[in-house]
Length: 399
Image (tube, rainbow, N blue to C red; front, side, top):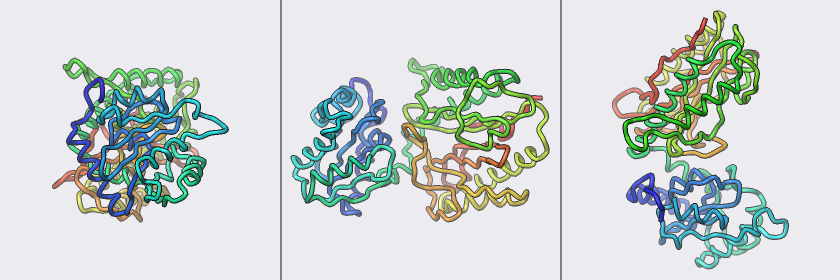
């Protein structure tokens, strides 16, 4: 049991477990092995920088989950998960990065001990944290088991947020606002990018004083700040250098507020000097597209409807993005803050529900320029989507 207060109530963890077990039954899965640290945290509360080694959570139909991981991380597990300490099962450190033995041998032994050597076992086959070698070892060690691809099984249960989760995301949104305010205030020609990034991290981690003893403290975001300028803004995922900001260039800033692993991404573009007409035209189209998408993003609409509403405005000025313009957000760990389920993409027919949260992210990355103006949104009953952050929806110009 954790040494400090759990982030969520026991009832909330029980609700999540019911959702996952129901999905397991529909897919005829007897045991689910979850390796994605976001799903591990969502199901048990586990929180630690240990996802670079093999670890996971076993979900059964008739007993509490088991945390399984490296021995030195078991001390972190008993301090963060809601289960009893006996449900945290470590493996010895000599299994780590060994050429002769593999941690999955110990997981297979645990599954056998639980009487599931011939069961149908669900695995998150397509994610960042489960290797081909891990699968081969499990297959060898459990020759009578049937392995089923359970990629996304837990992720899909996370799409509709509880009130407890939304409270965390609203705090993350306040941090994101503070970070963007600081960016707009500080960025000037000649200032080095790494210096701005240092201030971004300071604002992100320091958080805000809300009058409580704890305050709204900032957690580490799953993605580093992204801030390419000028022609480099055509490449959305470049990181920073010591290059100075220059007059006559646009820089987009892709950041997120993060509170207890819950993310609210928020992007704005800053232009130093007088922007060219093509950027002003693009800004207007993006803002109009965002407004159209926000109006469309209601319960009962399809994810593709939001994409069509946005792209209609871009087509008026002859821009074809050729990419999705949004994805679900919530709890996450590196290297990504998306939930990897729904996409605001024209062929995605997923029906939107109240309580879903998305990063409405219609960035423009053209041949030699880029522009980002984005919103993190909440789907709500009886109204257009709510923007979690409250800042002007525009390109900031500092002339």
